[in-house]
Length: 489
Image 1 (cartoon, helix red, strand yellow):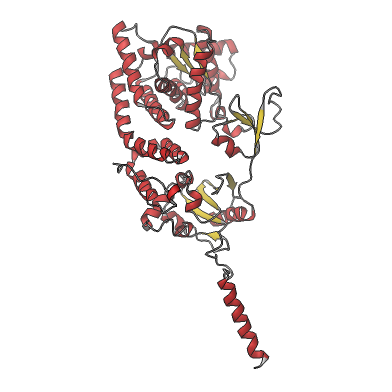
Image 2 (cartoon, one colour; image 1 turned 120 degrees about the vertical axis):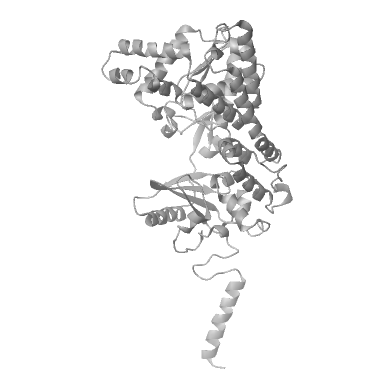
């Protein structure tokens, strides 16, 4: 047999052996080897559809998944239709909140790309949940997407951000922060995401992008300072540690569950027999001792604090100013008026606001916000209806003008109770689903769904489609997602 005949036979045998051992041809992803990166192209609202993915017309690369159906592990989704697989990805951040994300998806990492004026990407490590924001250089969309993918592939995934945690204040800082007191006990955490999983809040100085004050203009900041000064001048701040702890624990839970970084909000108890509560933009949130004595459960207190948080979050003080007879006047004198003159003018507006209260539509909007915030935090929003009923009956017993100050200037309590009850009734099926997830240890996804209550109220069918597909995943028995208790409407 000639040497020329042996050579091709030898190479052919080596190729068969290579494929048998799990090798693959250049440019193809081995079925055995874990792909490095999967890519989803989202719309401006960070939502996904198969149609948006069609615009991701990029060449294949080793270790890269561009076809959305190839993202899933075949065995896990064997019971799902193509439509159900697509429903799992409709809101990628929702799926990434699942504890099954690594068991469900093939790659090590997932890159979400959104064109929101500037092409940005969010890279997520599917095992650890660590995240990293990537920014593409200015270019046409195709070039920008290629740049984001290249950045993700060239790196080793989201880089951890070590932080120093202050367990007393429940806040985390960058290592070496000069404003961190040497007298407090701290502990080091290897990544910022771990701190947030524990419910710690970012320091607004170390992480200025979380500082809610940046979103205010100078007029709103000055109004907030003046309002806080007026309130604390009229009332004495309570030093009752039990009352303060009661309020702060509920307030902290509301902020953590609703993903409010600590951007100025703090909770203050006022030593007064009045039944009252106030808020100013970004805080403080005030509640009187008298109102605390009327509230029997943490759920009732959560509703009151959430109502005031909703006023602050929705910038009701500034919006009330824009509607008022003072509109334009304070802003026009802000730059050149003396501090005392501006303070007197602002004081007149604020006194008028505190005496008359917010407009009816602002109060109803704050009630809706309170229902959603308490639901997100796992409190019973139906207790807000009980609180409103309690204060309304007290106002009726005492006679008009003699009832609780917090309630006196608000819309009719019957209409407010009815609005709350209607919202609670609509949220009941979602509450049942969330409790099922929590009972099965899927707390992160359950928390995400609680925060998605506004979207659920707009279209419950979309969430039902997700949960139905999620329940049909073929995972190990100990990690299988729960089946829906009852179909959502």
